[in-house]
Length: 148
Picture 1 (cartoon, helix red, strand yellow):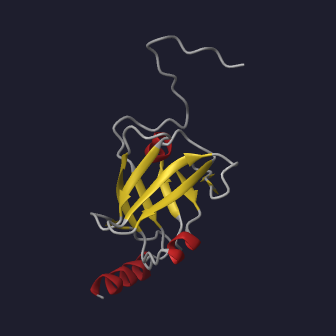
Picture 2: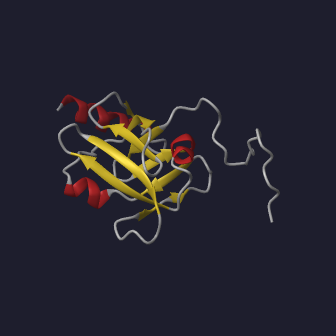
């Protein structure tokens, strides 16, 4: 049984996100979402999440959920502990969200929400992510996709 946390203290854990680390969500080239530790911590490190899409503004919202929600998808923490993967292929297909190249987007907390939520502007600033396995091929594909 873990010891109670004294008032005014915060417990540090091995998987605690560094202070000041910006929240980021990456839409992978395969159509899944990858949340960095800070984004996952902002959601309360849930086992399940619900995905929302605001069609007019091209916003993605991720909310903490539980297994009882029929629309919840399972968050899959990766062995490195640096990020969590959330299935999104069917979500991207349904809403026709382009994912030919991987892009990382800044995320922000949704204040005063009924559950922990983060918001991502898919039309906002993003960083193209180049794969480590085949960097030259990935750069070429990214350049081709950006030229279209």
